[in-house]
Image (tube, rainbow, N blue to C red):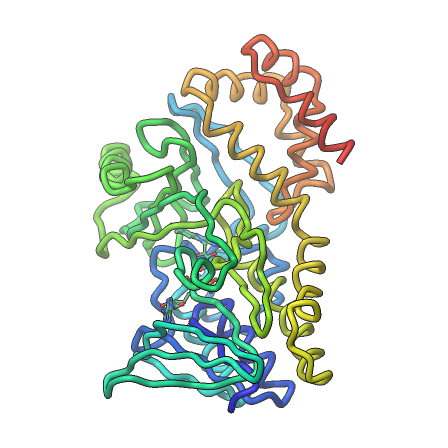
Length: 398
Ligand SMILES: Cc1cc2nc3c(=O)[nH]c(=O)nc-3n(C[C@H](O)[C@H](O)[C@H](O)COP(=O)(O)OP(=O)(O)OC[C@H]3O[C@@H](n4cnc5c(N)ncnc54)[C@H](O)[C@@H]3O)c2cc1C
């Protein structure tokens, strides 16, 4: 009998495993892949705050970014820069591997090549069933943590529902010519409803990728053609990796003997698709809640609901405003995006926003509300019949 079984050795699962094992709990992680570190679709961009949370060494840092160029559909760009590093670009597979190894060193037991097919709870324990290379396997614990990423079937099977709003993405490693800052591209022919990127990853390497509503396959090919035509990349170095991110949180992330974390819980910024930082912040809350329930020997949904209460206090408003901004953006035509670029550039709105302490890599709601309040932006968008201010008032009321 384990104290905790964690399904999934992604960043959220392994991080949680390490923290729980560090508290002296008996922890088991079940992962369908043969080892940790499979998420090559992820760019691995994280803020300084997130990087400082990670117990990893600097060898996994591929690039440090303090500036970015944001391109309009027609190719105009706005450049944003700060004096200090704003984001770290990490080798994502190496990050997951490193966190899993540290969790193992703290005492967590990892079972790789173990596919979980069912989770069954009763009054006394949780039984997790699946298969490994030798056949059927079964594990028992007091609590189970679902950290099996976006699209997991367990939340629906266990009565917690599922997330239906998501974006799909693709990424590939490329040979970089001399791009030395992050580039972000908008436009319906490259990344409808989201954006594409070219991100330096050190030593002539870069990651080119995009998120869009669905079917990213044709768009990544168009992106690569554009980048090659513009002389920004020389060649493609890897196969294309595909992935998806949730854009809304799961309504309920706990039940008797059960907690859901990371992408499985929808703890992702809808503005950028970044999920590492919020997943880790929520994992820390999950660790505290689980330790308390084990101490009290009370694994009821009521006791575990503290987890959701706390992570909602931290993130619910942020995710709701970010989702609203994402939905607003994805309805814009290229002409409207172009128009917004012109207003931002003409009034140097990006510079005043950059000077504001509200603008951070991770927390976007305040900057969204600040932008909305910018009179010239609001007035011009009013002409396009895009109603920003009314949302700003509603958000304040909430
Ligand atoms: C194109 C793209 C780019 C991104 N770029 C960034 C970025 O730059 N920065 C950022 O912060 N976020 C980024 N993200 C989001 C980020 O990748 C996720 O938020 C993060 O990986 C979530 O971690 P997780 O541990 O919750 O889930 P995952 O990393 O998906 O891990 C889930 C694990 O569970 C395992 N698993 C699933 N089902 C089972 C099963 N039945 N049995 C056993 N094991 C199972 C999987 O194999 C996997 O190892 C990006 C996402 C995409 C798609």
